[in-house]
Structure formats: structure tokens, C-alpha cells
Image (cartoon, rainbow, N blue to C red; front, top):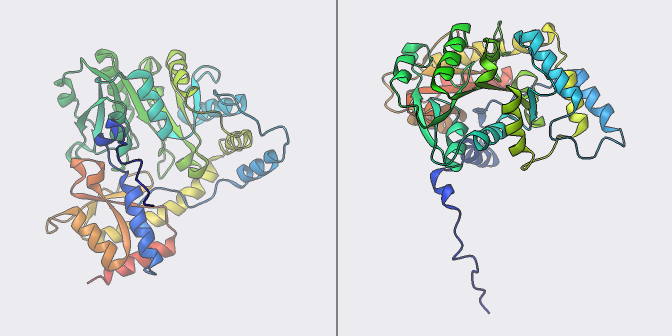
Length: 393
């Protein structure tokens, strides 16, 4: 007897029509298929650190995981040890004082935080300002949650900084949040005290909340900065930070946000209805990682600096140009005028040289003439990628 498909009349929620599957989710399936066929693709796509956390971090995790009393549910606000460590980290490296009890909220990664903050601040139909180019999740999650996305331009001629003259002319009456991300991904533009001061002033005058996503400030950057160092910033700003990039812990899913006590409490109201606290041993290990001294960060950056040189050679082999002052774990380059389309270039590199490079259009229309190379790849793999590209037909 033939079985009737009982799901034929079931449809997904309307909100799914506003977004597509994440680019890397789709593309990495294709790369995995090519690898299954024996093509040995070198991926220079995503920014997933391939180096381990500090040795003491791993030791703490292993030791604490042995505790028979440490496997239960954890507080939604995170354990005190982790909150105090985040506060100490901000004091030591950013010169920012945070109350660990009321002004810090640990997160299961920054992507989770984007969801919680949007739910806490933005009603359906209200607007959010999203950078172009920018992290695609700012746009996709906003759309899923019914917010209207308004792009603001970041352009090379402005050093990939917001055009405040352009912003002043925009109607802000329905805008609730403005997403910023410095040091910037994908462009590598670094933050400055002047930029942060202007953003805080803009937020206060326009009655909006700036959410600064700040996971890259320890990568190839001698002067980590926080928007919360600006006087009065906590009144109108939220800052995300993450252990994924700065401490080589992407799979651990440990991040945080900091702001004033009211904002943190509103976000907690959302978060506590969606997820639970992280495994206690992981939180204690993260607290250990935050105690790292300058020499640990220096060692990390020695590796990134070597890789950055090789990524620059790949850019040159492809005829691309780039700004030497970039920071962070990617290299962002402009494709040559002789190339008609960035995806044409990245697809040719993928299928001819078996090297996956990210096309800039996935970050917005202002990225359509750019490519991004991840530095999360061993030196010998980068050297092999360079050789293949140089030999590409």
C-alpha cells in the first residue's frame, strides 16, 4: 500500500522567506563534497582559530570536569568567578570598570547575544542600522525577528568608518539599535578613541543603542580598545566580547556582553527564557584563560603575523590590493579591475586551485569587489595554497 505524504500541506513560518541558509553552511557542504571526492580543498574561509587555548585553560577544564558536584544546571547569569574574571580582564586591558554583579552577562557566544539583544530592544517593524559590509548575522537575525534592516555605508575611501554626515541625514525616528563591529570584520579597520567618542555622541543625541561587537581586538593589534571606555558610554551602548577569537576557544561558545545594569537585566529576561547556564568546568576554565599575560597574546600573534605575510602573497598572486594596517584574523583585499566579478574569481580559485576564499559580496553590496582570506590555517597549508594559486591555469 502506498504511503501518503502527510507533510505535504505543512509550510514553514513566513519569517523563513526573509532569509536563506547561511553562506558558509552551504559552501562548506560543497567543500566537504569535494574533499570526499579526494580533491583536498584548502579552506581559507571561516575564522575558526586552529590553535589551542592556553595550557592552564585545558588543565582547569580537565580538573574541574572531575568534580562530581559540577554537572548540574548553572545560573543564567553565569558563575561569579567568570563574571569577576571578565571584569578584571576589562579593567586590565581596556581600562574599563564594570560591576561583575550587574554589568556583565556571559553568553553562549556572540551570535546568541545578537538574538537576545534584538529581542530585548526591538519591536517588529522597528528599525536597526547594520553596516555594509558587515557580519551577515546582524541582518539575518534582525529579519527573522521582524525588524526592518537599514544599511549604513562603510567604504574604503572613508577608512571603512561610518559616514557621520550621511548618518545625520537619515531618519532615526524608528531606529532602536545600531550595530558596529570594531576592529572591523571583514575589512580589518581598527577602532580609534575618536570613532568611539563620535558613536557615543551620536547614540545619545539620537536616542538609540549602539551595540559594538568587539571580538578581534587582541589579534594583530597593539592597542585593544573598548567603546565602554568613553565617558557615559554605558548609558547608551552594549559591547559584546568573545573568547572564540582572543583565546582560541571557538568551539567552547563562551562570550559576554557588558552595559548598564538596566540593559543587562532586560537582556537576561530574554536569555533566561531561551537557554541555560554553561557547564561549570567550562566557565572556570574560561576564567583561567582570561588571566593570560602579554606573552601569551604575543605568541598567538607571532603565528598570525607569519600567516598574514603568506595571505598577503596570495593576494598579490591574485592581483588584489590590500591595506597593510589591517588588524584581526582576516585579510581583506580588493580584486583587480580586470576581474569582472568577485564570485567568478573565487569559484575559479576553488575549482582550479582547490582553495576556498570568501567572496566579499556575502557581507553586503559594498564588498562586491573584495575577497577575504582567513588566517586560521597552518603555515604549510597557506604555502601550499599560494603554490596552487601561482600555478593555476
